[in-house]
Length: 466
Image (cartoon, rainbow, N blue to C red; front, side, top):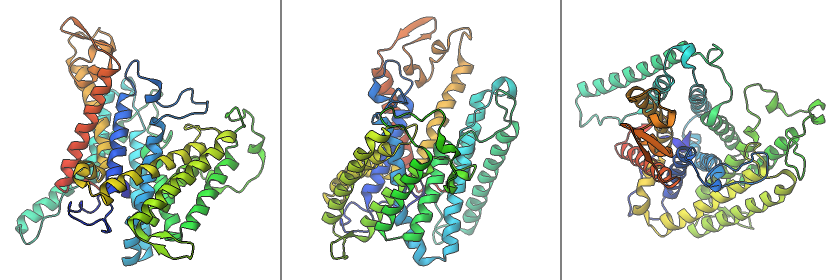
């Protein structure tokens, strides 16, 4: 997945804006991941305002900034595809490019499969936190890539040592995932199974579809736009939503009508893939324009920064207008992946990229965003570190609680999880926190610390590479 894996190093701050490296893409990816870490962590904070959570009730039309985070990341996935695949398509045979895409997609599906399952303590005999720590640490170790040694500066012995150390780490990670799979039992005693693909799995399916479509049409942005429209139409054909109520009919007569929507006849591909791919294709369309130039009325391409900025703003406006047109008949529904939700989210992300492009590529304020840019190159690592840290806290709290008869809220006193609750018990004393402000401050600090850590690793050329 291009948006969350190793990319070239960040250009120097003196690099001209005309450079092929668009640093605003990395910065936007890092910013979106920072926001994702924050909203995931702050969600359980008591007394949190409605606009800092997913829009609720879920079957009513509406959205908050939290509902934009995941589609914004998918938009960035698509935005990065033209940059990642164009060079490969020029220098490698097509079958090798397809193998590269399939390998990355399969890796994301594997991560999604493991991270979406949750064991039962009584059935399995393990503490849930221990199982999750094993899974997340193994997932990280399996795909972690260390900097390659320079043969001119290192001895052959050190090169061989680093090579076999990497092989050993990946072997141990594979064994760890096998152990997690082998001993897993849910509350019904069942082995691991696919309930849904999880966020990482959905990204995997979306990346696969977006990449294959881009490989077919490449620089043809008009074809990409048409495919976007077709995907939205396919989704609406399978998921008709009643106007005004924005709810799916209980007994939909459409289900009995023969249709040729082959995607939904494939058992393991989620229905929302069409809409999610449409979001990602919007990013790919903008990415292709950024890379190759914006179209003119005479059919030529203009590859100036001003033209890129203008196209991005016009494209964002067009997406927002399309979302508005789809809003009444189908509503703004994240859980149902309605077109209006997808188009509004894509419009917001395109406009946000335009702002970042103006600041960091055109006005050259790169130093301000350099930390986010480095973190943006290691976004998947940051995403996996966050739950690893969470389950580590749960494990520590469980085995350091002085009085196991205390309530769950009172047990979490030794780790940052304590700041998620209204009150905790420490050595027999009750401490009350001012919520939601304490929880928000904790989530902001945690998100920043994780991003700083992954940015540090990126500077040391340590990446999570699929």
